[in-house]
Amino acid sequence: MRIDFVSDVACPWCAIGLTALERALERAGADIGEVEIHMQPFELNPEMPPEGADAQEYMTTKYGLSPEQLGVNRARIVERGAAEGFAFGERTRVWNTFDAHRLLFWAGAEGAPGSQRALKRALLRAYHGEGRNPGAHDVLVELAAEVGLNVERAREVLERGEFAEAVRQAEAFWQQLGIASVPAVIINRKYLIAGGQPSELFERALREIAAARDDDLPPYY
Image (tube, rainbow, N blue to C red; front, side, top):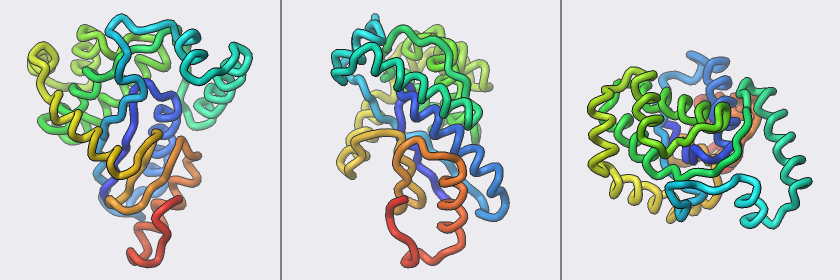
């Protein structure tokens, strides 16, 4: 089974969605066979400058929400994260994530099996749990080392601007297929599970897809 997880490091629902998906995979286990997960890029704030922006000001301007509404949304996200096992912390700024996507692409292309997924988890924790800048090269190199990736090669990829065009092409590919919000979980390049769904829904969908013939199921969950 192939799973493409289209997401952005800046997306809190992506942190919830990946955590829920991984819980579902643990519970389904051998029942669904071998699984390959590919982290695919999507940028919520592609025009964000390197210095970032104040999170509340940016979200208020972008979505037209009051501070009170943002607080309600934040509380809901924290609650959903806790239910799935992801701990949200304080996040006061919004950052550009393009370099994080470049490093993730490199990890998928050159890293050991599982290293891209581990790096994605580390990035989500650093940003949403610890409020760190996922676009800062020192943070990215530190996280690469943490998950066992080659530190010198990681630094080289970042400094040379490698994989920039590959990331842009991948982003365009998913957008052309109609992906306009994340997370988007595409299974076997056919079935879409949209949003940060509960782990129970992911598990049910994974089991159904693994057990059924291709023409037995709807394309959306």
